[in-house]
Image (cartoon, rainbow, N blue to C red; front, top):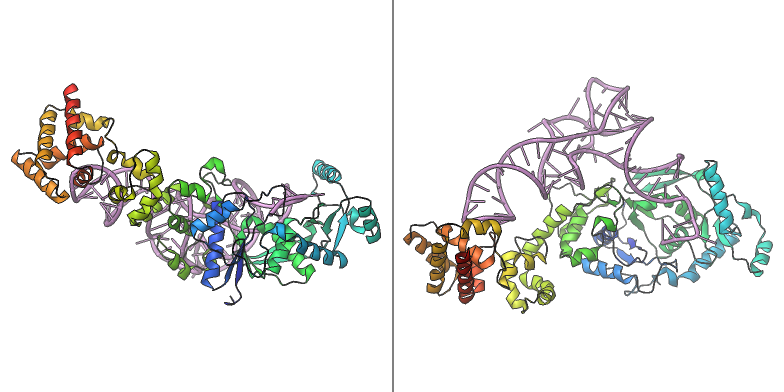
Length: 485
RNA sequence: GGCCCCUUGGUCAAGCGGUUAAGACACCGGCCUUUCACGCCGGUAACAGGGGUUCGAGUCCCCUAGGGGUCACCA
């Protein structure tokens, strides 16, 4: 069972620059687990490979997590009693335990060169045998090793893996998974530059940071037996593991850039809301067994359990994501959307303050699925239509009575004081009935004339936003257009 | 290739030995409406295949197939 007061989980990405949605979901599950059980969420940057890590490349991940609202209790920029929280700053800690393993004779220096090993690997491949490190250096004496190091050789350090037995991973999501030790070789703990390899560093870090539950992607399941062996060699207790299946692209391959947006910042930039992404990601690979689609953070916290996480991989469906975003957008405060839109609006020359944007947002946010779509769908609020929808034009501008109808529309606008949408509607319906017409006979031409479109939000609301003089101007322009046909 | 994980409609996903096999997205009809969207009503569509176990299997076991992961001085 879960000990409520000792829960410590971590999200430990390598700093690749952006927060991948798979990583985001893993972070979310960790976060939910920590919050739900009153535990701590730790962020650790796995930048032990100096060649691949750049100074600030963790910023993108931090940025993404913040945007999603997945805050951490300990980590870079948050501090904590178990730091430092970047592997690159923990090198002295790794060497300490490396020494311990060396002294306990559970690890040894290996002087084989990369070339040698590559050749062996190739030979094994040729003879269709599985490659395992031969263990040549396993019996080099400590004094000889010392001597060779003094002479300038740069060995790696290998783990003396047991030749027999098995390791059972007790996975909270997958159950017991067995691995045969015979399949393992003496894997490397420290590179020749002294830096730890992943399998060693995670173990040291997870232990030193008192991690109770390791919730991570399934790609790590196969590495887990190595890690368990290390826990045992170091005499440490083993945390609980939970391996979450991966998120796949629509073609069931690993999700990559060629499949479109894969990072949370791309979604952010494309006009998706963080709460929508959280909700969607939660549903992807987790189920409450409740028949419900919409979950806010509190509700998620309320219902989240590890055994609601599914074992099978899930394919990311843009379509449903968009649908969900549309719902959150419809509920979002117009002021908030305005803030997100302001920069784009200025760039497009639509200008204005958020106050100008708000009425437009109110009308459009329920009919689009992303934030920027509001400006696209509602361009006519900011500039007169440059052209008229072709089908609509044929239908409403190309008939015998089109001109006459438009002139009625114009006079209607001229006669109205544009006091309210309701009054405008009343006036239009009155005029239509006076002329023995259907309201639609006037509504459609006006819509097309003022927006260039056949589909808009409620016409009278649109007219109110544009205002009397703009409506008159646009309808007049449409009249000229019709005359020119 | 070895090892490990996974397999219910196109996608997510409920089901945990007895169900007409939920629900959501998408799709197709219809209703509502000034149009669009929303909403509502209805529809098409699934237990990968084969063996067992059992009175009875989507549910348990085995095999096969397919997909994914992993086997680095990457993480």
